[in-house]
Length: 303
Picture (cartoon, rainbow, N blue to C red):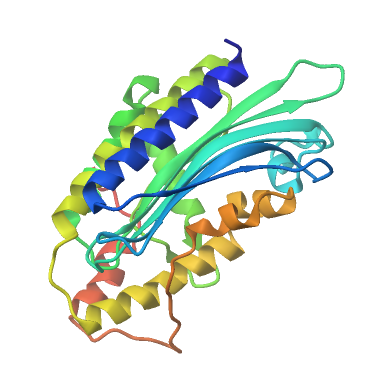
């Protein structure tokens, strides 16, 4: 089995495992939408978008696999590798965003991906990226600690430097610069990773992907049935607006997909089904909503 087949097989299996586990939690069934690029489109390739909407637990949960090739790396992929500008490329990944119905259950994002550039007359150049991050609407320290501990454990065998480095990278990346505000409590993020060669990069990517269910499902189980009212729901929708802002304004993955001619419906499955914006919203002093900003939307060493 070649490198491409190995990565593709792992990613498809990861998508299947995550979807099966979430169906057990929700009781609903993910819609399976297989797609293939038509001849003449900017990219060639295929993928499967799996999505559950209107579930008992998940208001929207999307988990997509894609494998595409293109004649020229888009600008978002070469900003750190200018020597590869103009190269043909191949990209594979699994990306998910889950928006639970209950405001006390946090939104979560995870992505693992592999990219290979094929510069003319040279050997392919592989690199890997991904990570996961947690976006609560109501903060719980035990949830943040659990999530970060799982992230740290997934990186432990790759060196003591990886978790603090990738945590800081996540804090820097998932940050709304136009609001001077973190998106959530963070997690880990890495990009353009090629240290130790392709085999080491693939092993690290797999370890992160395999850690996702243990990182998120215990938190979801704790919060999915908590009682809530109109106040909590309104705050959840308001904070979801921040999620939309980040994905459309700052997210490199969104930009990569749209710039390279990717499948728009799959790229934008990360959007919440409902969100709201309120002019200069300010939570009441001492409230749980205010506590989100003061205790959780801050840089902090959780483990």
